[in-house]
Each structure stands twice: as structure tokens, then as C-alpha cells.
Image 1 (cartoon, rainbow, N blue to C red):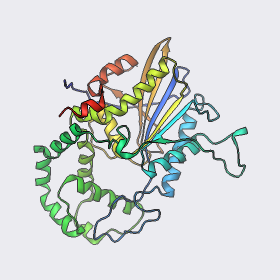
Image 2: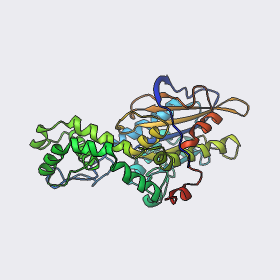
Image 3: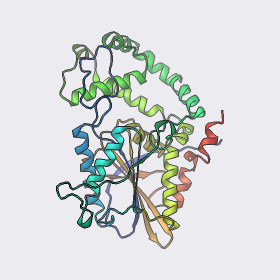
Image 4: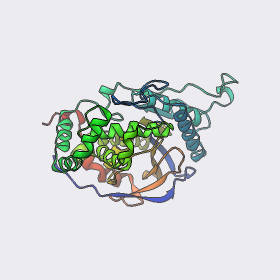
Length: 357
């Protein structure tokens, strides 16, 4: 398999114009809202969470509802005023918090109007959200079994770079292992620990005394490394974010050849989904997405049968999306150049490539 270099991308402050007459199709990938921890550690004093582990909080519901309202306002002149089943497609990770986030976003995006109001006391309407089990999802959760990817990920964790990071932080790992009562021997374990501590801080809970002897910023930087490792090579990008981009492009092609009536496709995912897709697009900065972070793919028809792609990133549910400059496809980025530039990270046959050990 040939491997090509994908150039970097950067953010520029060009705000999406959802009212542009040229706009033909919008696709949005977003992270779920505020949640409870997915894991704890033996000595954690905060182990009782309303809703259970990894569940969407009321704050998270409000965040995604607000994002839905933001998208409605941004695309008010493009989206249909009423929900139309063949104009809207929604897919979610199998995780409850993602399914619930999709539903609350839709409540803000498509509140019922006129004849669609079925209960005057409840301005909400049911809208289908599609999903597949985590073990079958190679698009959003990206957990479908792929032997070639698993081999590459194992190699990435055992690379000289990561081994050196682990060696440099050996004393920290020893301290964390003693303090938490659980094994903290690599960047993956530290990421999960940091996520738990971060959520506890966000909920105004008092962190254990042992945390005062370490730098939480240092833990955050290690966590960022772990987010990036899943797309450490072009091959790994191809087998993760490439599968998502393949679906996005397939949707665009259907819209171009008029076999689809969709106006908008929505994908509800995780922080790692956001990182993986942006890194597959060429973004190399280490970062940790906030709740409600989102990526927008706009397709515009500039001339008959001539389409342009614009990509935007919103850092969280409350920020306006800023245009991403794709170095492999300078603006104006035609659909063909977008497709050509992404070829190195688009799997021809994901299932077959996963078996090429």
C-alpha cells in the first residue's frame, strides 16, 4: 500500500455563511455534551454519580440543545422550516450519551411547528437517530475489529517516542499508582485518570489531597498525546478517520448526482472521533476537544455541476465555527481536489484492508 504525506491544516476566522445561495449540503460531526466519568480508580472519593457512569448530564443536554439552536440560526435560510424525513439523516455512536446528545440537538434544531405540534405543552417531536452496535461501528466509535489497525496501534504504543515519554514520566507514574490504588503505567491510563479528575473539577468536587503534589496540566498534556496516538501514521488515519470521511464523501456524491434529497446529515460522536477526523484531515496540533465541539462540512454549487467544499470547526457548543484551511486543497477547494487530496487516507475496501497483515 502506498503512503502519501498529508499536509497540515490551520484555522482561519472565516465564519460559515449558512444563507449562501450556493449551499447545497451540510454535514456535521459533533461531540456529545457534558457527562459523568466513564471510569474511576480504587481510591476515588467520588464514585456515586446520578445517571451512572458515562451518562449525559442535564448540563450536557442543555449544551447540545443550544448547539441545535445555533445550527438552526446559522442555516435558517437553508434548512427546511419543518422536519422532513428525507431531508435529514442522523447517525450516532451506540453510547447512550451520544444517542441522547443527538436527540437533544435535534430538539433545538427542529422544534415542531404548525401541524407538527402534537402536544402544545411539549415543543418537541421524535426524530429517528440511527446507530449500530459499538463492535460493528467503524465510522463514529471506530471500534469495529480491524487486525491491521490493532497491530499498528500496538506498534505505536511501543514506539521509541512513546517509550521515551513513559520513561521520562516513570516517577509520576509511580506516584499516581500509589495515590490512586490502581496501575498507572502508560499514557492511556493517565488519560483516563485525567478525564475523571477533570470532570470532578467541573462539578466543583474537592480533589484528593494527593493531586496538590502534581501538575494537572502535565496530566492533560499526556492525555492529549493519547488522543493523537490513534492516528499516529497515515495507515492508522486511513483505517479510522478515513472510514468516516469515506461516508461523508459518499453522501456528497449522492447529492451531486441527485440521488439524495438530504439537506443535512448529523453524526453524534466522541472527543476521540473529533480528534481522529481532524488529524486525518491533516491537523497535527495536540488538543482535547470540549463538550459539543463540532466539525461542519459544507458543499456549495458554484457553477452547474461544479462543487466546492468548505470545512469548519467549532471548539465547543457555544462558539461560532471557523473555517479550516486544508493545505492539501487550498480555497476554493473543488470537490474533485478535495477527493484527490484525501485519497491517501481513504480506504478502497476497509474490510479487506483490515485483513492485510
